[in-house]
Length: 458
Image 1 (tube, rainbow, N blue to C red):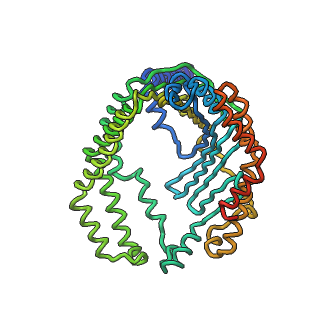
Image 2: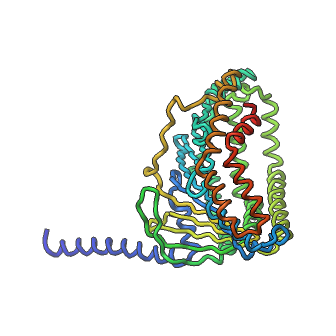
Image 3: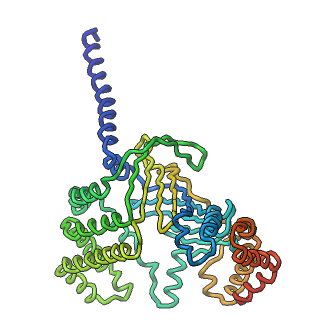
C-alpha cells in the first residue's frame, strides 16, 4: 500500500472519528440547552425495565406558619409548634423498590419494602414481593414471618370453591398482547405525540437548570449529575392532568389502539376456547365485541369525561379549602448517560412540609434481586385457609410477638423519652398531661401488653 493510499484512508478514518465525536458533543449541547428536552430525553430514551431504587422522606414543620393553626389548641402556640416540630424531625420513612419486567419473556418481579423510623430506629415495617408465580408479604417487627400465596395455590382455591380449573388457562398469551413494539396501531400512536408534548412543555415552562450535584448510591459509590428543577403547585399539576386527558379524548390514534387491543383480547378469548373454561356464554362475548365495534367512541368519551370531571372537581375543592397555593418543587438529577439518578419532591400544606427523595441505584443487569426467605420463615396462606386451628395458632403467635416487639421497640421508647424531654418549654398544664402519659407507659408496660393482647383476643 503506497503512501498516498494510506493518507486517504487515514483522512477518511479521521473524518469519521471526529464526526462522531462532534455529533456526540453537539447532540449533548442541543439536549442539555433546553431543560424540557433534557428531562424528556432522559425519561424516554433509557431502559427503565429493571430498576433498584431507595426511598426516604419525612415531615418538616414551618413553626411560624403552623403556629397560627394552634391558636385555639394551646396557651402558648409558639412553644407547642416548636415541640411538635422537634418531634416530627425524628420521624422518617425509608424504603427499597426493585423491579424487573420483560414482556417478551413474559416475566416480571416487584419488591417493595417500607419502614417507619424514629431517631433512625424502626418503629413499623412492611414488605411485599410479587412475580408471575408468587406473592409474599410480611413484617420483621411483627412476627418476622413471610406469608406467601402462589399462582397454583390461587388456582386450587378457586377450583375448590367454584369448580373452575384456571390452571388450564394460558394467561401468557394475553400478556403477549401487551408487547406492542411491532403493532402498527402502536407505531401510529407514538409517532403523533406532539399534542401531549406541547401540553407538558407549557405546563412545565418553569423548568430550570440547577447546580451540579453528586448523588450517593446504596453501594457506597457516587455519581456526578446535572440537576433540573421544576417549581409548580398542586393546581398546575391538576391542570396538567386535565389537559392531558382532554388531549387523549380526541386522540384518534390512541382510541384506535385501545379499541384494537380490546377486540384482540376478546377474539383471543373465543379462538382459544377460554370462554368455555370460564363458563362465559359465547353469545355474551360476541355481544361485547359488537358493542366495542359499534359504540366504542361513545364509551371512550364518557370514560374520559368522567376522569376529567373528577380532576376538575378536585382542583375546585383544593382552591376552596386551601388558604393559599401549595408549592411543589421537584428536582431531577441526571447523570452523563442521561439516566435519572435522583428525584427529590418537596411540598408544603398549611405549614406542614413533606420531603421525599428517590435514588436510582442501578438499572438493567446491575439490579440484584433479594433472596427468597428461608422456608421455615414462610407461612402458606392456602394452608391457613384450609386449617382453622392452624390459622388461629399462627395469628395468635404473630399478634403476641408483635405486641411484645412494638411495646419494647427502641423507637417507641425513644419517642416516649423525647416527649418528656422536649415538652419542657410548654405551659405547665399541657406539659403535665404529656408527662403523665409517658410515666404511665414506662410504669405499666406489662399491663399495656396485656390490654393489647386482650383486645386482639389473646
